[in-house]
Amino acid sequence: MSSADRKTTKLPLILPTSVDTNIRKLLWDQELSENTELFGLHLFLYLTQFESENFMINPYLIHSLLAVLAEGAVGNTYKEINNALGLINRQRTRDFHQYTNLALSKSASDVNFRKFAAMIGDQNRPITREYEDNLEKIYDVEYIPVNFKNVDRTLREVNGRVSQSTSWLITDVISREDTQLILLACTYFKGSWKIAFNSTLTKYEPFYDINEEEIIGRVNMMSQSGSFAYVFNQNLGCYLLELPFGIDREYAKRILIARKR
Image (cartoon, rainbow, N blue to C red):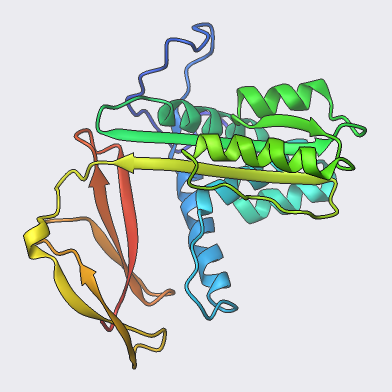
C-alpha cells in the first residue's frame, strides 16, 4: 500500500526528551486504531458467550501482546495473527505501537499512567538480538530471560516487577506452572475526571443480575448530567459511553451500558 493510500491523521504529540531526535516522523494511523478497537469489541462479544459472571479485560494490552508475537512470527502463523488483529503489514504495526507508546509516556499533572509489559522466556532458548531490540524500542516490552526450573526465583522476580509497576495493587500475576514462555502486561491509571462527579448526587440504586430480572443488591451509583460522546452498538446490544479524564482530555473511560436498564 502506498503512503498516499494510508489513512493517517497527524495528531499533536510531544515527544519525551529522552527519545532519539534522529527518529523519523511518526503519524497516527487511524485505520489501525479502528482495527484495534474492533478487535476489542469482537473479543468482548466472544467472551460473553462463555462467561456467566462479571469479568474485566484490557483489549488493548491483549492486542499489543499478540502484536509482539506477530513481530516474531513468519509464514502462516504471521498471516493468521495479522488477519485476526487487523495489523495490515509489519511496518505499519511498528509505527503504530511506537507512536502509541510515545503518546502514553507523556506526563500530566492530573493523570498518572504507567504500563509494564514483558516477555519472559527460557534463558536456555534465547531469542535473536534483533527481535529483543524491536520488543524494547518499538513495543516497549521488556525481555526477561529466566530459568523456569528455578520456580521460586522466577515467581519472585516477575511478581515483584509487576507489584512495583502497579503500586502494589497487583502482587501475584503468575503462579506455579510448567511453561516455557510468558507474555504479560499490566497498567496503572489514576486520573481526575474532566467533569468531576458531585458526591451529593450519588444515589443508592438496585443492582440487577446478568438476566436483568433479580435485584441482587443495592449499591451507590454516581450521577451527573451533561453532554458526553456515546454510541449504540447493535451487535452487543448496549450503549458505549465515553467519559474523559484530565484537562487535556487525552484519556477517557469507555463504559458499556445495558440497553434495558
